[in-house]
Amino acid sequence: MAVQHINPDTMYHSPVFSQGIIIPSNARILLIGGQNGVDEKGEVVDKTDMGKQTAQALVNLQKVLTVAGANLEDLVKVSIIMRSDADLRAGFGEWMKVWGARANPPVVTSLRVPELANPDFLIEIEAQAVLP
Image (tube, rainbow, N blue to C red; front, side, top):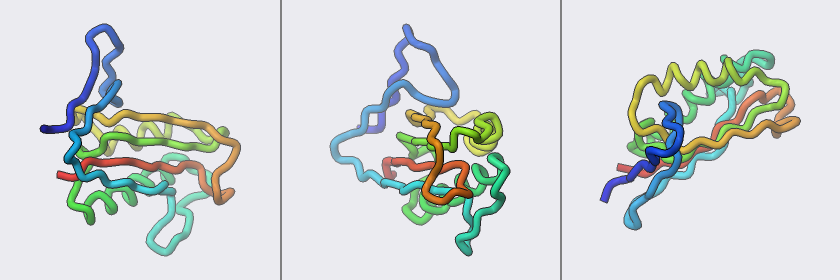
């Protein structure tokens, strides 16, 4: 049984997120911890640019997916936690560059918080994927 995306005809259909997803009972699930805008040296890429931090967080997310043998299409849940003063539009633009026009997007939750673990972080992205 494959992952099943649920988007009722009586609800809004978004190219960015699914309304629900059914995961088969025999699935292997990859849990991806919160990814931030840090490079391979652990340094924040830009303390003031939401777009650059989001782009780096997505690079990091894709690295974890790749090592696990998965790709973006295998994502079933994405949680986006951003600082309340960060520009959501810049982050959304970077997500759309990466996601593009793929079908069956994951379910998405976004939260605004006063600050993240490091005061220089503007965004944190955690995710879950069903491994192929």
